[in-house]
Length: 271
Ligand SMILES: [Zn+2]
Image 1: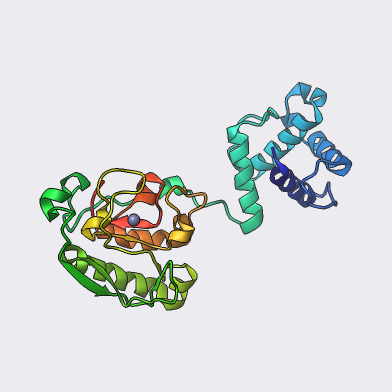
Image 2: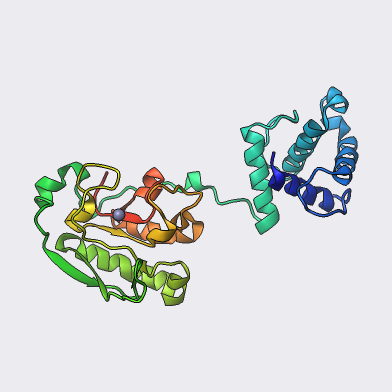
């Protein structure tokens, strides 16, 4: 139980009228008194020996009560700080902050369809040829203004990719533009283009990268670093759900959505 959790508890105590102090995340005397009053009011729902528990354990059980009142699954009211209580406290904090529970990311299973018949990564060499030869390239114009992620003053007019994926990429870009519009795309950082064709091996691996065939694109790499998971990567946010859905409907694969790393990367090949 950290300061944020104590603050969440204090906000609950304030809402139920037992606490009028600061939301400072400190278990001081006023917080302890408010916890005491709240536990007394709910004595019938608590284990009989709860009166003998330590201050810390009574604070935890009070936060568990707060979660239960909001219908958050918190497990037994035992005053013990386990993973279920910790997660429930996070949910309660999100409700306090936004008025809504967090978006259930585990339910957002990536769509797995393949309308364009993208190859599997393991067969890329057979299907598209050796990655050491430059692939047949086409530049697909981008309907919104792009800027190179590492040099924002350079604004490519399109994305150079393998000719095999060009039509699909054009459809994706059009749909994305129709959905979000230029201003929102800029706000979301989707103008920060991280490159497509690049004759290189996988970072942190020995196999050829899908970039070497010009069938993968990186977006906003500074805010979606290779090893970042959904807790840090911008592109994991709920505001990008439609973005990913549009790619996935064309069979493209997000490594972030399927494996929770390299959220910048989307590819026209099945892993
Ligand atoms: Zn990439």
